[in-house]
Image (cartoon, rainbow over the protein chains, first blue to last red):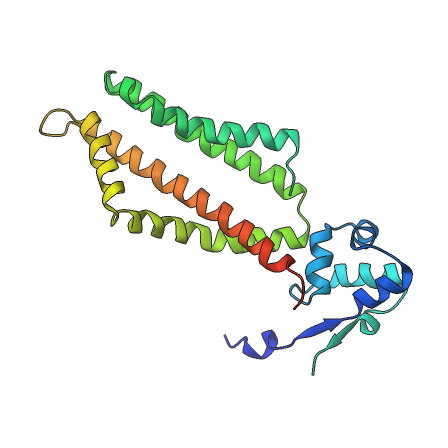
Length: 74
Length: 151
């Protein structure tokens, strides 16, 4: 099975900026969406792609849509 | 990740069974074969059951990031642990440890069924412990790597 097309999509996000705008710590956001702070650190740094349910939970926390937070890297 | 009190208890039990088996080897070699089978069976069953319960307890508290760490370390830890035992065979100090341990069990020439059983169980325990060590190290390495600050 050729999976190279699907795994070569890189995703960046605006979580750090959005969090700073609201004065939230990583732990605060982690508490709101119900995951560990490590999850938020890794997602912010672009080293870990969240699942779709977690992406929705993060979007809900900020009151935005997924597309407004997660962007396909050119 | 911090462990709950339940997880600490089952982690302790998981380690107690193989360690108590290794410690009791000098006593076991004096015992009849039925006792060796019974003791080995209890140790193996206890390790498997406590490992299973610990895995269930840990799984209940995992978010997807921790599942990522568990997936990575489990995928590579078993292989790395098995490989580690093979690599250790090439180290003279380890070979000496194996031969001296075996000699302490099999004092007479010509291995009996009991001695062969000991050697097999000892090898099994060493592989399991090496795999556990590799899983723990890889799990920690994955967490550190994924949590590092962006450059």
